[in-house]
Image (cartoon, rainbow, N blue to C red; front, side):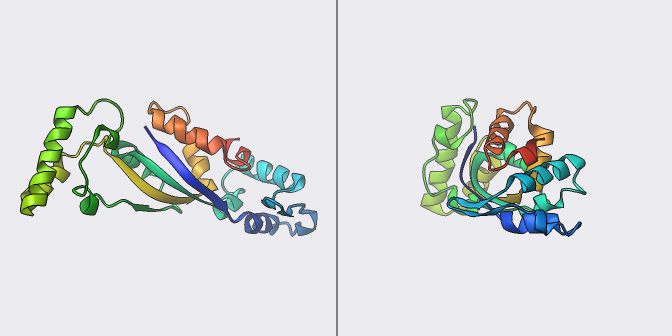
Length: 195
């Protein structure tokens, strides 16, 4: 299970300008500010696709298109996502500071594999920590938290990172990657990622 929202992309104007620098072809640029924001023109979009298809060395402009999103995903997914660290930043809900603040429910975990008696055991440790401040209970709670625990992070990356993710993960066996790639396909001008 994965939930992605609050998506925002930035840097389009700068990426187009940077993309046109190598051949000093700015005069051919047809992108403009429009009623919905910066709109990529047909000539610029065609160049973007050609450069993206030519490979990462030619598609450096992709690194200039910044993306933000809130992702709520299980820890086992975040472990894989952490492989794509180049040009990314995350701020997560701190498990250390928040795990004991509310009772855990089935909604705090991905899938149906975490049984209620297991959740009850985690809640027992949480309650013991809250009533005694005993660090041994907090450590036991953190140590036994399953990788299916859902953690929300605000993630910042760029289109170059998304292109690498899409290429590597679109056919992955985890359904969360399929859902993430579906989001990529719906981004503005996603063809420069999914070529």
